[in-house]
Length: 426
Ligand code: SAH
Ligand code: SF4
Image 1 (cartoon, rainbow, N blue to C red):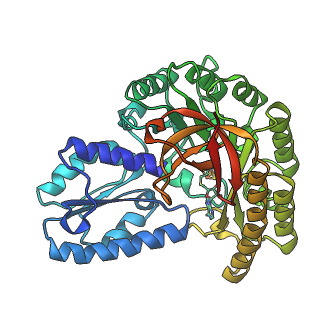
Image 2 (cartoon, rainbow, N blue to C red):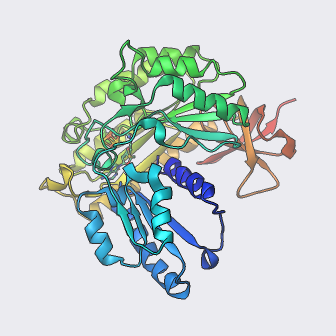
Image 3 (cartoon, rainbow, N blue to C red):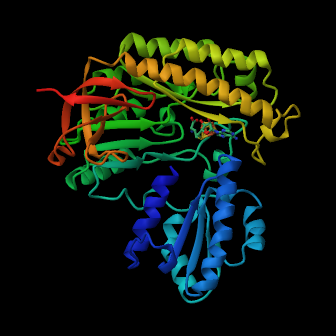
């Protein structure tokens, strides 16, 4: 979501005549689009803000902007402004559409801060995804209504708002005519897309309609909240042509006690029943997840229930996090916070279990053939190409660069924890 916002800012600044540069020393404008989901992200940003002070001393014409979630937290702006008076523009998550106006004011020499508490602009005033790229992220909705007790997102991105299907379909159709072949539909909980629409039109309906867009090759979506994952959605994915059989289904914890305290609104049994349903309808679907260790009150037994679930479910990848206290959330007020030491140890144990599982998942792919969308040269080995399976697994292989952007069949020959190696099938 933040990456998509950064793209919006790039587009706006381009329209204002700026071009991108890798040379920080000669930049006229630096924008840091911030995240505040975990404290570690915030600390990194605070470090960068400090570094930019030196840069501004060398180049007084430099304008610096800080945008996004971190600025949007209650009380954060005043605190940050005091700490970093060298910043020229502060822009909240609901103010990105108006970034050019803020930029104009700063160019005149003023300091500006615009942080609306509520989104006041129509959804469609945000610039659409950047054209001319093979892959694009497309917002289908903004905000979140779930208020998981650890999470700052609903506090900084507001309540759930769904874009109209015809606007989304038009945006994707335009992207495809500019060369895009894969879209990822973005929402904090895509499964609650369209809840406010009448007549009824839900996320499965949207997927079905996006699947009809000619020349688009692949459709992905993140994130699916397990409590709202319907049979209709799984069946729609199974019946589609371009709908990738990959579900990012964050479980967060394997303990019912912790899930309840997290306000996730499902039990581990319900989660497992959803996974079984996916496997029943789509036996080869890939599953990924997010897990938090060290949530307040998590006992050794609760944690072991998470390990147990990780061993039961064959995730191809898991994003694992230590619980991070976010002020303003319910969990931050809970008394039984877990020490950093315990969190670190649990994270290590969890990661070693998942690494074995990820490797096993990839090893069982050896010898089989998968459809790959060729994305470009491999980052680690630029002579080779890289692409992804429909399940979102990364595959490296030898081939000419003319293949970029096309679908290919690749036979897997080697597996690692993170990537696969394969050969083009004749
Ligand atoms: N809307 C998505 C997630 C957005 S945040 C969903 O519900 O799945 C991405 C992930 O960050 C979450 O799934 C969670 O695992 C993690 N996360 C969020 N808040 C956190 C916190 N306070 N500490 C640690 N991890 C957190
Ligand atoms: Fe945060 Fe929960 Fe909303 Fe995801 S669903 S953004 S974890 S509150």
